[in-house]
Amino acid sequence: MEAILIRVEELQLGKVIAEDIFANTQYPIIYKNTKVKPEHLRVFDLFNLKTVLVHNEIEVEEIELNEEKLDIPPVAIPLQQFTSFEKYYLDGIAQLKKEFSNWEAGGRVDLTKVRNIMLPLMDMVLEDRSYIFDLNSYSNAKDYLYHHCIATGLIAAVIAKKMGYERGDTIQLAIAGMLADSGMSRIPSRIRDKKSVLTESEFGEVRKHPYYSYLLIKNVTAIKDIMKVAVYQHHERLDGSGYPKGDRIGSISIFAQIIAVADVFHAMTSERMYRSKQSLFKVIEMIKEEEFGKFDIKVVQALMNIVVDLPIGTKIELSNLELGEVMFINKYSPTRPLVKLTRTGEIVDLSSNRSFYISRVITQGYKLN
Image (cartoon, rainbow, N blue to C red; front, side, top):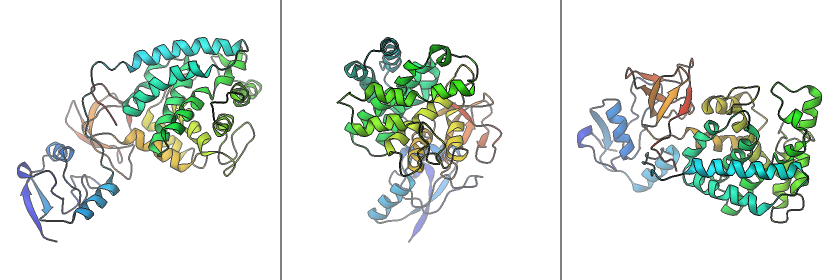
C-alpha cells in the first residue's frame, strides 16, 4: 500500500500511520496502522517528531480492526469543579459506622440504608474511574475497616462494568462487596482493632468472618443467592489456599473472585495498623505475579486495565518523589509506562528502569471514563 512522508504540523486527524514509530524505546510509541487522534498529536509533540509516514489510503474496516486491537487510552477531560465525591464518600463512612454498631449489637442488615450509602458512590465511580485512585488517600488505619467495606464494593463494581456485566449484577456486586466484611462486626474488638500482627489463634477467629457475613445477609431476599455465596467465598483462592473451606478452582464463583480481587487490591493499597500502604501499580504487579494462580486471570486483567489505562499527559508521582507525566503506555509492561519528569524533562522508561515505579496518579482536573 502506498505511503507518504508528511510533516507533523500538516498531519490531519484520521490519517493512518504506515510504520511502527520508535523514539529510543524498546517498543513503538505508536503502532503501524493506527488512525491519528488528538492524543497522538500530543505524543508527536512530546517526542519532538517532525515527520511521520502515513498511508495514502486505507480501508475503513482495516482501521477499525486496528483500533480494537490497540485499545488506545481516552483523552483526559477536565473534571467539573462541583463534583463532591469525597463528601458523599465520607458521609457514607459515617453512616456505615452507625450500621456496623447495629450489627455488633446483633441487629440485622438494613438493605435500604446500605443501598443509600453505596449506590450514589457507585454511580460516580462508574462515570469516572479516577475516583478509584483516591480511595486509599481517604482511608486511615483507625477507621480502615469501614473504608475497606465501601471501597471493596466500589472497586468490585468498576471491575464488573469492565468485564461487561449488566447494571443489575453490577449493583448486586457493589452491595455484596460492601457487605463481604460485615461479619467482622461479630469478631471481638480486641482482635479486630489490634495494632500488631495477629496470633495464629486470633487469625483463626478472623477467618470466621465470611461465615458471619453470610449469616447477616442470608435472609435478605433482595440480595441474589449467588451473591450471598460470593460473600461467603470471597477469601477462597483458586489454588485451595483460601478460607473458610479451602475451595479450589471450579468451586468458586466468578463473583466471589471479583470481590476477592477488589478486597485484596484495596487492602494492599491502604494504610493499616501494622502495615503501610503501597502503590496501586506495585500492588497490581504483585497480584499478577506473586499471587499468580490464586485469582481468575480475567478479573485481574480487568483490574489492571482499569488502573493502567491512563490518558497521555496524566500527571503522576514516582516512588522517588519525582513528578512527571505519562507519555506512552507499553502494552507489554502496562504498569510501567514511559514518563517525562517535570523537573528535568528527562524521559524515563519504567519498564527498563525498575528501581522505582508510579506511587500515585494525580487525578485533580481529570476525568477517566
